Image (cartoon, rainbow, N blue to C red; front, side, top):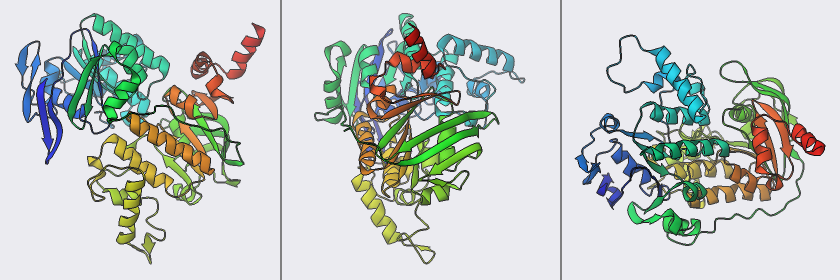
Length: 506
């Protein structure tokens, strides 16, 4: 890609950017949210047409008017926000965009190939499941499989490991290693600097739409890359001072919750979160984390058991009741569950307070009060938006997360449930989100943190609960001092008591 320029309504997303990819390499693409990484790759994939510059593939100039043209040339892309059709099955999504399909769709052959690819790459999915029924992690697997299904030679991966466990990420990189050995070229967009350092050969850094540098990975450091991304020195570590936990704020007892398919997603689970505490939830994506959180905030009915908030039984109460009791939820799905894409910043900022004073007076919304509150959220949480009247669909992932975080944390919650709160965020935004959650812990809130980033869980959690197939494998009281192998075994289905018993026997 030579001197690629792309503008949107007067905003320059890419300015004369050079980027090249060699056969047999992993080339990482870094930058803060809004730096232009996804735009540059969307140009390569044919979703956008450049306003300047040119694309060459094997030395020949290309003009991609659509993703179909790019796919025909052997370029595949897995987007951060998955390009899947929720109402269709996994196998139906696999054949979207394929030409010359017979009038009777080859379901049997497609299913067989999906299962073969799933086994080969360790990306287990049910070919007959509807995409809307899948967790965020499972949808990510489908998106990766969709690319592998199309046999692309140039692979663009936009945050591919954001919702994968360390074991799954290692399996994915083993697969990428095999592919690069066969001559594939891989563009790897990530904010996980450890992964970039471990698995890429070169790194290109963008900042505010411009090329900062392209460097050999072995010739740089995490700290130097973070500084190039942000434009100043960044302290990567976060401070989590020791605190004595207080009374129990949120708990569930013998909780059983059904998933969308009618089968138990959570099985007889008992957990508690206390004041001044972060309870981490670890587990492979799709093992009941989402169903647990939804039951704890009134979005999903509990089939059995109890949900208790500050001593009060709120089992199967409405979401509005949980909100009134100051239980706040930061869902993984920013655009679908957390925010309303076509509403603007100020409207999204009051989604949980529009019926209460001072926003609502005499049954009418006070828009001056709304505007004032929205400006406070934008300022306090560093939301980068042209104005509070900007539709949130136009914001980057990091700014969407900051807006949702500001809305949920501006009301002094008693309990905060955060699902994948730093998924897909850059270094600076990730650090900001983590600091805000720890500030709630320090203030006295009970924080339930669900993440597939084990490093995040180990650095943030006072205690760590591990789920497998909806069952509790155990709770670790000192997760940062627990061997990662132990946590991996628990995530794979071995109870903590059994592991400790084996260690005693040995």
